[in-house]
View (cartoon, rainbow, N blue to C red):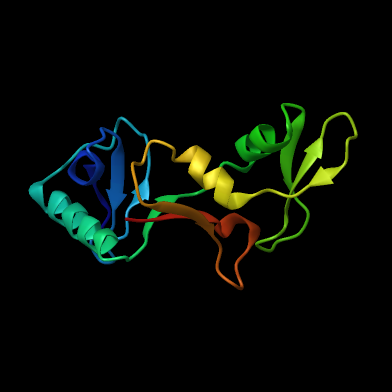
Length: 139
């Protein structure tokens, strides 16, 4: 069962987290509909914060590859998947300017800029597909 809490308990921010109590690894969301349902998710969020403080990574969520292309290469670039693998994403120009890669670590830092302190980076499983990228955080 996935329940919700807010990042206020972890980072002092007012955005929502979806938490799976079975794994206690939150995935970030900004949905206004995700509101705390009981005290249990807060306890799970505090446990996740303790894991982050101990060096365990917290999954912040996915990467907006289109936003990364625009930010890293210019407003005329968009993201496309060339093949289904972690390195399958490329930025293509709408005016024929060629294809470029995406710096996923920079993309994660830019996308989750509001998370104070710690380290944020992009991660994809070694045998993962193009849609399995996520941003991780450690304190």
